[in-house]
Length: 213
Ligand code: TZP
Ligand code: MG
Image (cartoon, rainbow, N blue to C red):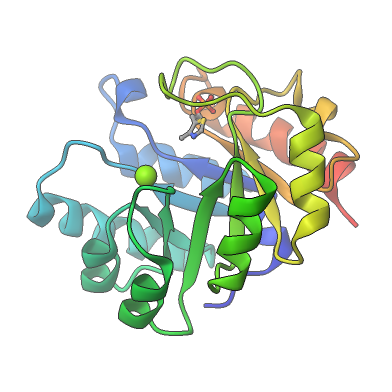
């Protein structure tokens, strides 16, 4: 599956800390039913076999909604589950090796915090760049803060699409208007919501308003 710029409009990143008594697959499906455009399965403490099984379950859902499924960090899980791609941080391994393992029909997203990192990622064959944390977030404690200026510079420096992440909510999303981002990647604003479907729908409407075209 090739990445289209519009796939990044409202990119949901999973987080088990908001599960409560719910199933992650149900939460993800609710968001997809409400217009989420891409899914990243992010598991920081899961054994390989369980991670693959979960990725396979997720793949069945994302395939029905025709949205890309991206695996955070783990290329082996992405290959084993035939997911649509991986997302790698700067410390998560080499993009050239990732491309060799995944092939050219898979998506590789790279986190970048500087123009140089973003340009290197593009030169290495990345399909999109994730930039953050653009706002304060409790979800990733070690996230560096990226200002609107650097975000805008990165968007101008690369031709591949850029998605912003970190502390993005329905209320602050409009601050990203004009930066050049293709969309927003979101954890808590969607997964912590009382009504995941409603939260997703509202974010999709607003993201279309600010980031389309
Ligand atoms: N990378 C940079 S910030 C962040 C990640 C994974 C966390 C985003 O979560 P939230 O809840 O949308 O702030
Ligand atoms: Mg990572």
